[in-house]
Image 1 (cartoon, one colour):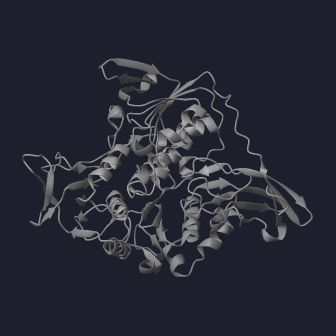
Image 2 (image 1 turned 90 degrees about the horizontal axis):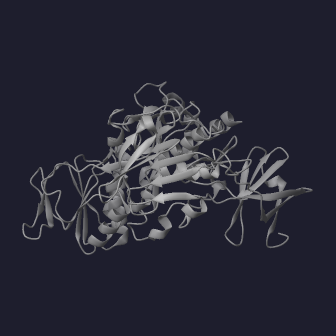
Image 3 (image 1 turned 60 degrees about the vertical axis):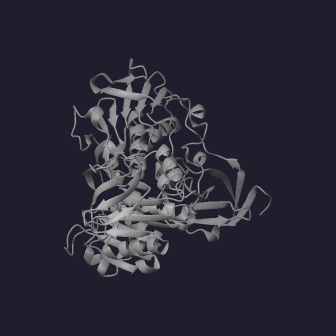
Amino acid sequence: MTDNKKITISTADIADGGMKSFKQDDDSIILITRDGDAFNAFDGKCTHAGADLGEGLRCGNRVICPWHHGTFDSTDGSLIEPVAMKGLTRYSVTIEGDNLIVDTSNNINNRANNDQLSETHTIIVGGGGAGFMTANQLRHTGYGGKITLISADDTAPYNRPLLSKAFLAGQMDESKLILGGSNWTDRNNIELRLNQKVSEVLPNENAIIIKDNNGDDEKQSADFLVVATGAEPKIPPFKGADLEGVFTLRSMSDAKNIKQASQDKHVVIVGTGFIGMEAAAALSQAGEAASITVVGRSARVMSNIVSQSVSNVLIKMHEEHGVRFAFGANVDDINGDSKSNKVTGVTLSDGTEIKADVVILGTGVAPRTDLLEQVNDPDGVQVDNELQLRDGVYALGDIAKASNQMGRMRIEHWRVALQHGIVTAGAILNDDHVSSLEERIPFFWTAQYGKSLRYSGHAATPDKGVLFGSPDNLDYIEYYFDDEGENTRASAASSLGRDKELIAFSELLRRGHAPTRAQINAGFDIIDQAHALSR
């Protein structure tokens, strides 16, 4: 090292076509990529959650984060795939003999000039991940027109997946959830209108109707109209579902109310999917509830995603942290005190009664398609490969039934919503360099007790899989197939602790070369194959 800003690295340490990260004494990380005699240097921490990118994989020009598969261009650090929302800081690098001199004081990132479509107006309906990412990406890739983001929420766009994870566990402050930072709208010249109810979308006019608190209508038109209204929790027709103490978990206010209501209280969680399991883990980690019981109809958790063996491990993990389970029964009634109108417990279909002061309904969500139901299927808005419904009108996020590498489907995952934002911004700007939806695949993760289970792709069932490693030791990867055929290609995989293998699978799946059952059983080296196809 020559001084505090300049770092010396041997060129021999970086393989041609590869990458390597170098940790510094101040906890920073330098990432070097190499292509022949061309070297590039970047801040080596993923811009999403700070993972060491050198622990991930490089496949062709794609640098892929080991944690959540954020992907960056190996030559300039630009963002290719979320869940990261911005590219890498790039540093000046010079070659002196057999050494590289990286100057971390000299950033050479060039943000696009906001000079494209400067006389146009884009209205975005919805402040979730898809709406935020559309606005953010437009500004970071050259859009110079007016952007208005309209949200029914009372809070600026925030990281919704962390509500049932770090926030509910008391491990992350509300301010850390705000997407883009506290002054994102000012820095990006975006008009943010909170607490606004859009009562009607007029796709043939590229217009919307906003109803204010006085019941008055305001019509706004735009050159580009982006509808990203998200999803809302499904509330089963339980008797007592309207009692005080019954919650769903979708918004910031929901999470705050649950945190407050759960202190020293008996909590029952209905549902064994993502929200139910993450809420149970988070409240257990917070350590303030008197008891936590999860009610599920089957004998498994996350049964549509992972196999019985993986489910068993998740159940064991929860039970070791004091969570109890009531499997194999539906909720018949939510019981309450007639005088106070507060929850007192739940009655299951097998007659079991469970005491409860708080009931959390993790019973799924439904897309908010009502604003567009006259022109589409209520199960999802049919859009083209650029998420366009009409010329200049886009529908994205949880409401969109769109094509990706896996086919046409509606997927309620955070990364998919962010992908939709990137694709929509690229479509508005007519940017041919942005990968289409059909070149992308779904990915999600769930964090429970500090362990992160990751899943790539989309499988019809988790019960026709091939398992490697040991779920009991939190070290496995499982490949899922839609049938038992030897030549059937894997359509998804889940993993704990085998990040590079999951990345490699994701890259093969994205390129249409997912391994077959026969290949996997024969000892297929998935990492070598991903590298080979990317050269």
